[in-house]
Amino acid sequence: MAHSAAVATPPPKGKESKRRSSTPRRLPYLLIAPAGLLMLGFIAYPVISVFYYSLQNYNVTKPWRNGFAGFDNFTRIFTEDEQFWPTLGFSAQWVVVQVTLQLALGLALALIVNQSFIGRGISRAMVFSPWAVSGVLTSTIWILLYNSSTGFSRYLADAGIGEYGTSVLSDTGTVFWAATLAELWRGVPFFAILILADLQSVSKELYEAASVDGAGRMRQFFHITLPHLRDAIILATLLRGVWEFNNVDLLYTLTGGGPAGETTTLPLYVANTGIEGHDFGYASALTTVAFVILLFCSIVYLRLSKFGGDHK
Amino acid sequence: MTAALVEKNNAAQPAARHSAPPPFSSRRTKRERAFDDVPRWQIYLPLGVYLLFTLIPFYWMLLFAVRPAGSTSLVPWPMTGDHFSKVWNERSFAVFFQNSMLVGVATLITTTLVALAGGYALARFDFKIKGGFMLALLCSQFIPGALMLVPLFEIFKNLQMINSLWSVVIAETVFQLPLSIILISGFIKNVPVSLEEAAWVDGCSRFKAFRTVVLPLLRPGLIAVGSFAFVHSWNHFLFALMFLSEQDKQTIPVGLNTLIGADSVDLGALAAGGVIAAVPVVIVFAFIQKWLITGFSAGAVKG
Image (cartoon, rainbow over all chains, first blue to last red; front, side, top):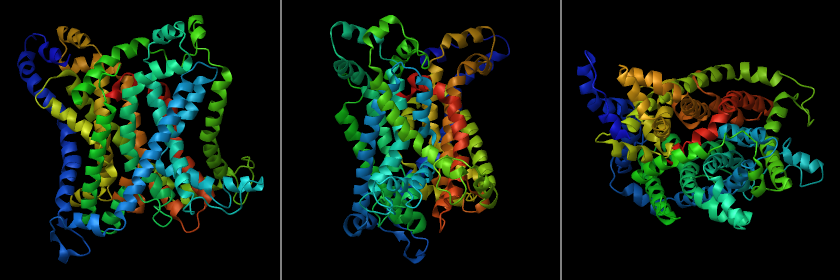
């Protein structure tokens, strides 16, 4: 399609002919130039500088030590750093739990609002609405709910359920699930929207044929719906996985990585080290390690799930 | 991976366009009803439970925002505007709101324009670095913005743009671009080339043909992409937190964070701030809702 467009430029007449003949060759480059330059300057260059600084001692507060460090930063991460492994472990736990639960609930929700029923439009609008809410706003809302003196638990306690004065956010036993619930509230609509969009293109005839052949709803779901959604689900889970790994807003504002570092993810630790601790060299090395882990996991995931492969 | 995605993308679109019913019509033919007979309670029960989970938090925020300090009533009556006037005036939310608006609108404009140009190039031309460019767009999806904070901070410091709203606009635009370009090029591919060719035959320049023929057809897609850009930059917290340290340059999410972090959290003020933060995105969301499903099912997300 694209090829024919470039070739199909009509024989122009008069004054325009000169410009026409020269533009199609340069035009695409001119058109992608703004995007390309922005991405070179603010994505590619930072990535390269991260790799560069990861091999340097670079700390604004200790300038006398700045200079080439070789792999010292990396050795420090894997042998001395007591925070690296716990934060990585928490990141992995966070990503796996979030993506799994968001997918399961999002899929169920999409299947429900894909049915025809009275009040569908307004129900969709309402269940999708947290999608547009920011991490900080989510934290705000859930802090109001979790608050020990006037939060939801207080009213539950008034009704005789649970105890007064418990704050789920400051208890190491409950903080993970408290944060998970808040993030689910905001994250499920993303999956529901994407899956619902993909459901629109399942051919109705397939279901009809299946139901004529006597296949029940369960079998229709596993043999028609799920295979159809496959690629969308793989891509959505992968993007969401990266996104949840990257998610700093909610945890930073809801728990601040606490209590006792219990909910500090790797990116949160990197940001603390780099910006608050001014240790750019070490933060860059941590970033590099995180990149490699993410890249590795993404490739393995795409391979294992046989994305885009023939699976019919 | 790129090739597979693009192919899949192209293949999926015509099918999607033909079989997708308008997402909001709830009319069913008799034939459909025959095989699509889900008991009503299996829809309304789980939906009702989920709606409670979705709506109670919103209600909670509204309740705290309008009920007088010290009240424990569960209904928003009597109402007070005290919390709103307090955050708006004393906690500088008026300034934050203005800054967030500036950042949001500027990001919307730059993202849409730059992505429109790039998307058109990808949809309509074959050129040497096209494959590489596509690959770069896809790969950049896997680069966590939070991990780019430190180098970006260095860059903006060198450009002397720390404490300038433009640093946030640029950072937001850059991270919005890849997805926006992919989406827009998908929308442009949906517009038949023959329409443009017809305009060329009539003597239109390429730009004029684009402006008069293609652009009007792209409206739903552009609205979706522009709204994403606005909502994302309105919501984004980290860039603003790190690049804008002067109080009169801060944005709403940073302002909310300040309220959360205050020594004794004023819940009423916090809730009112939350409502102020929510209003623009709720309006945008209500506006783009009907384009959301169709926009995505145009197949663009798959690519």
